[in-house]
Length: 136
Image 1 (tube, rainbow, N blue to C red):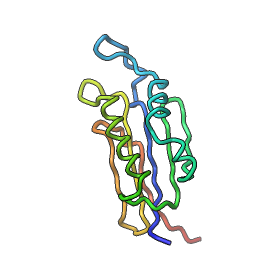
Image 2 (image 1 turned 30 degrees about the horizontal axis):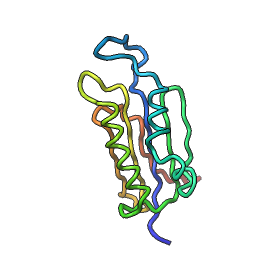
Image 3 (image 1 turned 45 degrees about the vertical axis):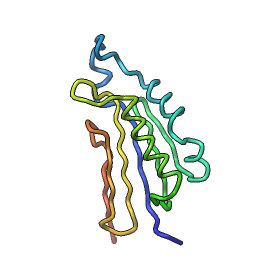
Image 4 (image 1 turned 180 degrees about the vertical axis):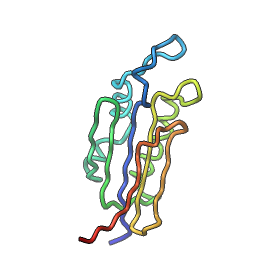
């Protein structure tokens, strides 16, 4: 059966991005630019098909959820996803002056202490992990 994980990935515009007036050095980044990058760069068809990812979006974000998957480093799809983070960072530079678009990756393994997190440098840390057991 193999070791299984749940994976959550978020690509989003940083909070306040829409409130910041555009300048020549820092033009307004529309959500359409983030969505276009996602559609052209992320392995969407493979994610939805073979990997059964749920993809949802809002006014400023795209969320992917992979449930009960074998997220092994030697598998092709997780490597493509990891590569997409580097491409994201190249497309949406993130530094002190410009950090309008971010990504967050969280993988929760079967073991209670197996949580892996990765994010771009100026992420808002909007993705949180909560493990709970409730007995009523």
